[in-house]
Length: 635
Image 1 (cartoon, rainbow, N blue to C red):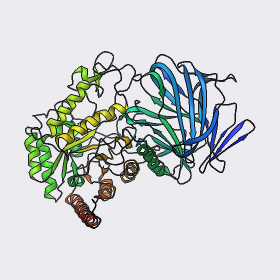
Image 2 (cartoon, helix red, strand yellow):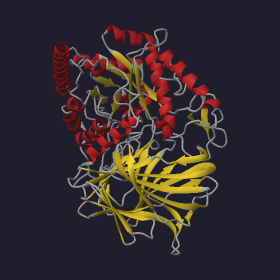
Image 3 (cartoon, helix red, strand yellow):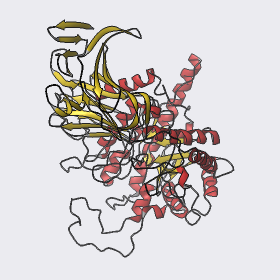
């Protein structure tokens, strides 16, 4: 790496990039080694307080100093300024041979609101005022979290949200992975279709911090008029007294987004911000094929001749007869229904090793007492599954406060609970007791959890926390605290308990054993159907780069029709642990599953199990010859 000086300018030349500071402006031009510009990076930042916006002024000239850091050459570029909200403030770029690291630092006292990097509000000596952004010199941005419309690589002018807030409402369907890796990638070429990742140069942008310091709910890529900045919303639930340094943004040239994700994970592991591998050695039964009853519940709740609107019309064209009372899928999480579905599957040679009892076996989500009307003897039913050589996972709805006392909850300003609060010691103790009761030998004796709805995190400055201390975690950090409590309690109650989540951020590798690929979406921005196989192959690639040692639950719901279902059944074992959601029909199309269809499942499961056995035998042979422990490979 080389630092050169010209008239009023400084240039850093590294193997993968050029960075030039023209002087007189709070900006630095980042380019490829051949000079093709990625962005004119703004060296401004805003760290708003809830009571006062942070606006920069009296911005100094960049201070440039070469040096060494942990055995690496580094050039540090610091821009200091005055702030309307803090007693001191600066932005620091650290240029290494393979990457650039960006942080902002403030001093003072206040409650954090929104933080912006690579841009912010300022008053410049030229008279220009308002919000300043980094320029867009790239064509596209890679988004590692599934969204609808489905567009893995989208135009650079489209926004991205990575975090733990979302649902199926307009503008919020980005919670399929929650949290995903907090890593974007900027590309030179546009994508050809919804799941296409173009070749060509890429620049990854990953946010690094210990999980406990991820006290925001979302990282947002916010473009506007050929410019962009990155936003973190701390929601007014983090106090600063003294110094606050933002998470580190790492900009790194990469061959493609997958290389960028792998490097992002390696950065987190190297700094001690993520585990190097799974927290628990996999039990043999974890890789057994899964039957989850949710798809069958939805199919049973489907009303014939009443299709779900998919065309964009409020009411689908054509006649439809609407019954007075519509069945609801979660009402069909019943002991007799599950017996019927498992019985039909067994008649066709389809015998899962793991059964997931889905939404909703509980009387109340927050307290997780079995519903005696739906499950007259859940403990006895689990014992019957064990006697048949099967294991049982219970579906768990994260964050839901139903049935919890108010001091264990986050509430709205009127005192109504909106979420369980992992910052409340009372809730964490209650959660431990619940998990022990569900998995322990004196309780239900279940075998683990399928954790869902991690995207339903509380978000908002007006929320209250009556049972939490002032320094309690918020945002992504709070979700990790919740899952860590659940995970540790599960392992204490049953050491081989399996915890399945949809949290492929590398920092969550210590609170889960398996990552599920989660609900299938449907259409691209033009309204065209995106094949389920393509969607889930993309998701698998994200998980493989972010948590390469973790197992993958391939999921299967909701799938559009039998044709797509058959295609995915034949693909699942190449992506992870096969999962079956249907027993008699597809809920979306209403098509029946025939004996031939179930024979296809039985056949693919036989091949998958044979492959597992062969892999285990090869691992045992290798282990014996090398006097080392082999690793079970799946699929």
